[in-house]
Structures are given as structure tokens and as C-alpha cells.
Amino acid sequence: MYQTFLTPDGDRAHAPEPSPGKINRLFAKAVERRVNGRPGLYMQSRFPIRARGGTQSAAPYGVFSGFAPLFPEFQPWLARALEARVHGHLFAFDRVQFAGGESVFKGGLSDSPTLRDYNPRSFLANLIWNTRGETQCFQFGPEDEQDIAPTIASDQNASIFVISGAFAVPLWQSGRSAAEVRAEAARLQKVESDFIHLLKGPETKARTRIWSLTEFIENPAEPLEQLVDLLNPRGAHRMTDLPQLLDLHGFGGFLQDLRNQGMAPVLMGDFPSDAELALPAPPFARPRVVR
Image (tube, rainbow, N blue to C red; front, side, top):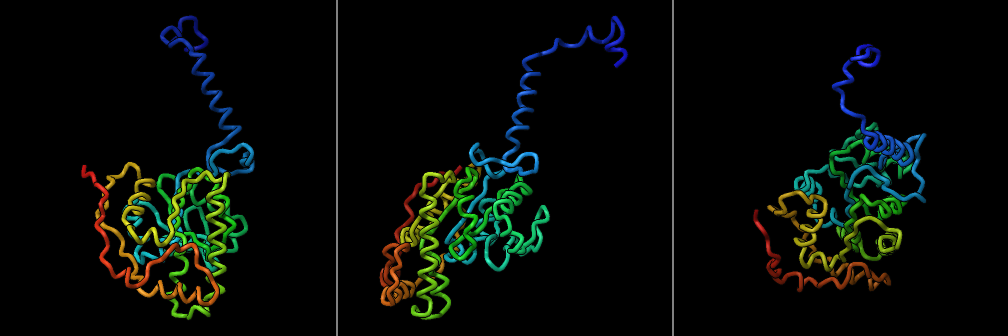
């Protein structure tokens, strides 16, 4: 410092000329960081205001509704296909289902639903912030706590994939009669219908893909490839394997029994009968590019 600034012929002769433009850019960037902060970072000195818009989370993540009931091995398959961390139902009523069954996740997040429900928005923001560099995915359905739904719908980093009507598959597998599950099926359908209505609303900024259960089972390979392409655009775009779809023979009769009990299952679409399900599936005609 003395040799450079306090001597007549110091090292300043060899120093480059100052660049006011670069200095101004650095100060402008510092001001922007002070005013807007970093996406997904919440702290006392900078708490995002909804009126300013912006991104609520720190990185892209995926939300899947209706996939786990149809594919018993969906979570490990998705983890392999995306090279991502795939959780269970993070907003289940009984506990937070972290990947691997962990009770404490990165950042000291607990699997306690009481702590999560105190501020579900901050819980999700902390999870995404603490796992930057690793894509996070989790399951979400009408049987979960719904307070987080407006947050993920308005988040630009969220990619939401919904198979409407799949909530009835666990009810069918429970072995209970249609009369016993009619009230629960009606409640779940109302919750999922409200969620789909929210996703189609004007304030939704997340990327959404919605299929009815009937549309999905007609050709499940194409939606699965779509979600992999969206969440992993730099991947090889080749599906080496697909998860095994649950055998749904008898599910159509269960839906008919619900209709006979006075409950109209409308979110599933025109689900085929057992005889139609027994017909061989048409070949998957989508062209594939091998690189």
C-alpha cells in the first residue's frame, strides 16, 4: 500500500486505468442484491413482498399428484430417471415423508407435521434452499395438507404433474365396499377438484400438466417421457425402462359401485370396463431419437 500510493513513482505506472463502467455495474449489482435479495432466501432483513413478484424458491422442483398410487415403484424409478432426490408426501398429515425415511433432513428440517404446518411456505423454501444443486421432487395429493397449494401454484420454479382421479385407487385397494368409502371419495374428489381449479387460475405461474386417469392409462409412456424431459432437459432423452403400472382390473366396477351409491366420480374420465382393459394395448408410436 505504501509503495503503491505514497511514492511518486510507485507501481501505479503499470496499473491499468480505472473502469468507471465496471465499478458502476458492481454497485448496481450490490444494490439489486440488497433490495431484491437472492431467489428463495428468506431472512429478517429481506422478506419477499408478494406485490413485487419474483421467484419464491431457490431452484426448480417437481410436484407429482396421482403417480404413486398407479406405480408402486414410481419413486425409485423417478430418482434414477432424473438423478434427483425424490421424497414421499412431504405434506402428509401424520409425518413429513423425506426421501429414505429420514427424520431430519438437510438444514435441520424435522419430519414433525406440527413444525411444518406452523409455516408450510417457509418449510418448502428452506428445503429447496438447503438442497441447491440437487433437484427435489415430492408427492402431493388430496389426502395431504392443502395450505401449501397456492404457494406451489404461484411458484415459477415448480413443475406440477397431476393424474386426476387416481386418489380412488387406494380406496379401491383397501378392500372396503363402495358404501363405506363413498363419503371419503367424495371429499377427496372435492379437494382435488379445487386444486385443479387453482392450477388453471390466472395467478398460477408453475408449469402444469394434467391428465385424467383414463387419458393416462391409454398411453402412460408418453406422459412419463414428457415429465422427464421437462425436469431434466439436459438428459439423454431416452427411456431405458418404465415403471410397472398397477393392474387395474376391477377398478371400473368399483367406480360403477360408487355411482350406484350416489357419488359421481367425474375426475377419472370415462374409465374403461374390465373387458376393454383386457384388450392388447396399441404400440407406442412416438418416434425416438437415439443419440
